[in-house]
Image (tube, rainbow, N blue to C red):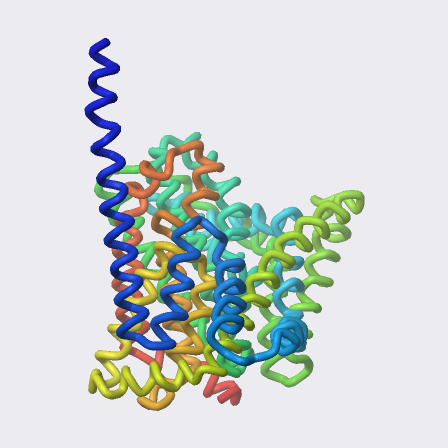
Length: 463
């Protein structure tokens, strides 16, 4: 009986609270519509649809259709044509090809050989196995281009090994979640391809621009890990001899050769970044099936099916985002937003700070591909008019996406690591904090040190 009374007391209060929250949201969206004009209406529609739980890709498409049908005279045929013509770009083919290459590498034994090589180099340091996991993530990121694939490939091997050696599970999970984010910062990267398509920036220059920032982040994550491991006296491994290191390198060299193919092919003009993605997929298939022989030929259809499913999902998001970009261009929204930002006299430093805050907030509700496709066409014109290099701006956005992958509620790396470690998202959120703070410091460095990103592509003649 007392339970019933309690429920009667709580239920009306919860309904009242929910009604208040909905009223506040409705009021904010109405104010956005009134004060923002067409820009406000577009974004109010998008936010409203996202709040209903509709996937971002569908929300983008519905926003375009509702706005154009109700508030413009654009024929429906133009929308249908844009659905097809918007993704008729040769560069977009790089996305499914890099996904395929990443899946072959994940299943083909490349990851475990990279871990063995990294362990032979620094396994005897404080927290040696954790440090080896970070180095292995960096090496895998050089040839993969996907953060989630990096976490799966390296984390599924290194995390159980760390627990077996006596490391706390939360420590190992924190290492893998953040180190896995290197997958989208180093050479090939799906978010870089999406940014390049959205802003007409050189994909080759973006690929190379991420190398030095990726190396810096690897060093910073290793530094944080070493300090924590030494403080808590975590296990160390026996120091490997030079013969053991050479053997480990020789076994991993087939995977590492993919780095040479990507960098050499693009910088020497042998093939385009899209063709480099195709070469990566073919090479990854050959070494996985015929060299390492860790993936039987019979498993190829399964890998192809998984790659096709993920590619279809990303291409669907891109298609709807292209529609959204078409709407913004038709209504002159990017230029209007750029004028508004420039009129605030923020300067380069202020604009970059504003962009970082905006992207970090967006990372709480959207995944990287959607954020780039929505935000890049709006922010890029303002950045160019302020004299900010498009390649540097792209790497800064990429670094923001890394942070978003490592914190809730949408952080994909958290969910992948949760499946591997069997830990809850709340536990992982606490575990990842020391490395997440390190990543925020790295974000500041990348934002205000453009030379870190731009030196290599300029030296290689890609800019």
